[in-house]
Structures are given as C-alpha cells and as structure tokens.
Length: 176
Image (cartoon, rainbow, N blue to C red; front, side, top):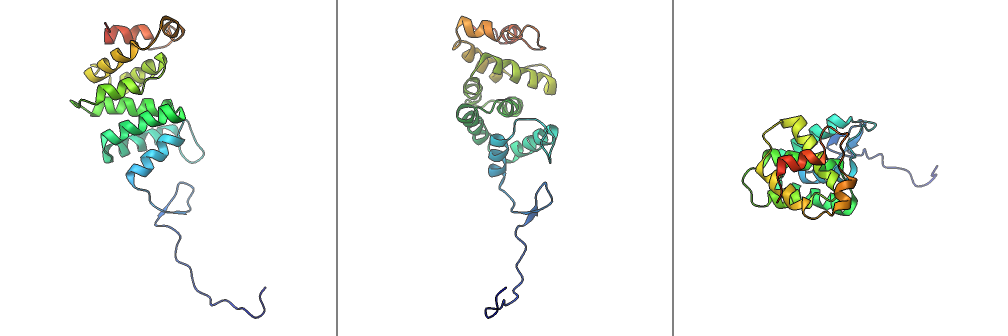
C-alpha cells in the first residue's frame, strides 16, 4: 500500500450502458455490429449463456433492423472467408423469405452456396420454417449454383438419407 501517495477516492462511473448475457456491464452494440458479431461467432448450437434457438431468434430480429443488402454481403463474407456454414444458411433462408423482387437476391443465393449440400441445408431450413411455395429467387440462385458443380461433387453430396436431398433441390429448381 502506498504511504505517501494517497487516493482521492473518486468513484468510477458504471463501465457500460447495458448488461451482457453473463449479467455484467457492457456497451450496447449497433445492430450492424451485433449482426456481424453473431454471424462470425455462432455455429447455431447451444452456448453457455444462450441456446441455439435464442441465437437464431436474435438474428431474425436483427435482420429486420439492418439493410438486407448488408446482411447478404456479410453472409457471403462469413461463408467465404471464415467458413461459417450453418449461420449463413439461416441468413440465406431468412433473406429468401423476406426480400422480394430485388435483383441481387438470386446472385446472393448463388454466391452463398459453396458446396452442393449448402443448397439442401438452406432449402431444409426454409421449408421447415416457411413451407412451400419456394421463392423464385431461391430457385434461380440454386439453378446458377448447380451449374458450378461437377459430377463428383453432386454424387458426393446427394444426401439420399436426409429429409431434403439434392434430388429434391433439383426437382424444385429444375435447372437447365
């Protein structure tokens, strides 16, 4: 303890302006920053302070607050640069449902697909949450994406034992 340099007993203000999931002081993030944070850190599984359903619910809420084009670009970035699969599938399914008539939506759905099973995952998410009919942007984006894959990749990811197989995607999409 200091003998000569005594403290002035200044009280420190509270560290943040909100409380985090652990109950501690934190600073509130903007909607864009929180969206990007969830997109780059969530594997859509239960975490210590939040369940997977809570994470998806918060992501859906943030999608209504941020620009859809920003969300699409962020999802493609997360998929390409960081390999975030499941969370980018959620964003793709939600944007396919909520964005209608935008010229970029089919290109986004084409770019977010890296492997053939990405299409089955996105379609399974969409059908489990919204059912049929499937939006045209989803069909057109997947039709462009199927053309990128060779026979080996398509055979590898047929997923005949899953609820939504690649054959189901082809039947819905009807690529040329």
